[in-house]
Image (cartoon, rainbow, N blue to C red; front, side, top):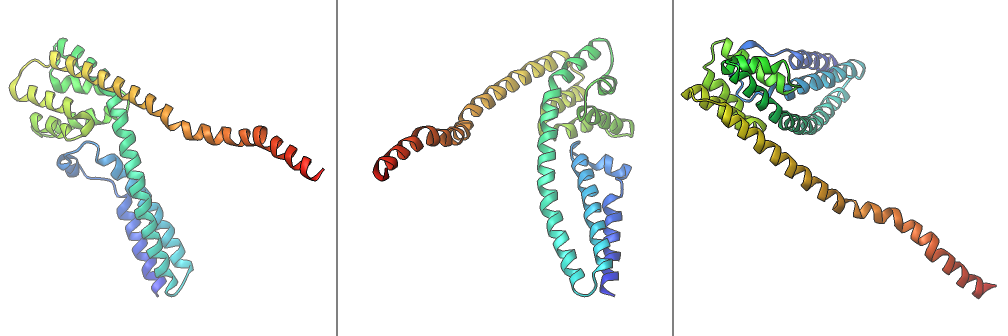
Length: 237
């Protein structure tokens, strides 16, 4: 009986974890980057609970409760680590695509497109996840969300804070965005170049210990072993 209950609960959690988001959640999501980690989390939770359901139907008695608790702990640890890594990768991709996105927005704006039309056009030209972020923001405005609020929601994303602020300011005041977007693109490129230089310097420091571990055995074998062998040979020969 316990196994049946655990299996039913696990199956229910699997269905809820894999259930897709609704349109209302799209409107209430302030951070454009929240949904991607949530999707991965739902998929992983569905997998874990599905395995727990399968095991619970096989194992009877109190062992099914132990298996369920263990699966929950493993899922929590794995999902937390996976979410952090996924978020870091996503932020890096957004920062890498930001200068190109600003350049393309400038071209579209100077061609006469409004900010929303420019964002929709650029979304078809830039890589993911930037394309999805822009497309989602445009979709919010098409669903009735105020354009200023939509761009401010975009500014909640750390990697896109500058872009969201500039586009939101343009939507609120009607001021020209081309010059500000050019400055943002240039500043972003400078910041990324400085980050790359910093990472390159760290590589030299971090490589010292691995190199020492690689050369130490060779030093022992080529330098110390022959000397010790000669000394021992002289003593016992």
